[in-house]
Image (cartoon, rainbow, N blue to C red; front, top):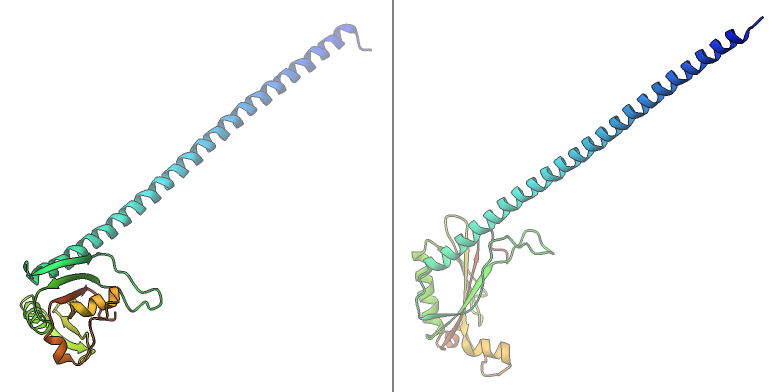
Length: 211
């Protein structure tokens, strides 16, 4: 027979067990919360680390590329400077760049830097003078494209594999092409070579001569 005293003891014992269970449950919940918070912090730190690493790699890569472009640009400027044209050649336009610009339709061809000049002399004398200057700058003539036409292109190459392209045409020819003056009519190369003043176009390509 269960007395009131015995029942009371059982009730207290049951309540004590329930309190212990609740205590263990609460402690376990706190631990889980701390673990989850630690994992979240760790994930954020890992994300920040890889983000900073990726940014650093990108910046280093850009620095290398920009440095390469700067060196190439300086090399091209040096080639123009070595031609030692002087004040008789008056710059008209300039497009010098250091990055290699490949044709979108032909990956084996690239654009050349170009500077145009005005020269108060005949086409023939201008070509002769520029050829001498190119040779003094370390270039050797390779061939003449469109020889016998109104605008032949004289191609030179140095021992570094850099290409120099020179085109000299009468100013009247250039004016006709731009303004439609119709003051120039090609007869033959001999007649063209005797005309003055001259419009000069000098191209430099460090990589190829496929333009």
